[in-house]
Length: 106
Image (cartoon, rainbow, N blue to C red; front, side, top):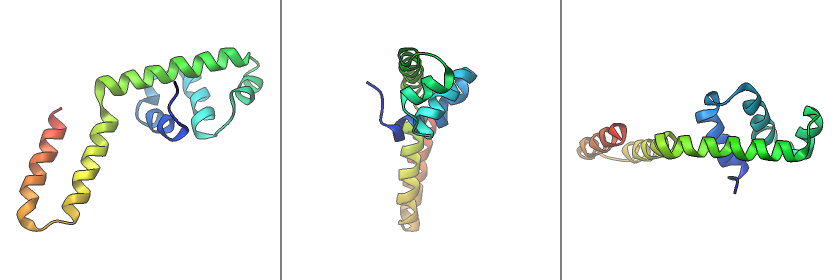
């Protein structure tokens, strides 16, 4: 099952450069430009089935990259800690700094 458009766009932002140019172009049209598979197929002059297969395979590649590398999860975790730091007193800063170190070491 494909992620929703927002999740797909985030995956593409983080890992898109690891795909071929053609895969990137199709996923950009699908996730970022919100074109339908039919529209992408017409523009590319290929079948909808070919585009559907390409989107599924390419998105699964992106999901595998996230599963192995965890860059999106780490980014979310770091953002959360930074937001907590913004609302903290000086005494808690060291605890948050340690949390950041642990996230970076993953």
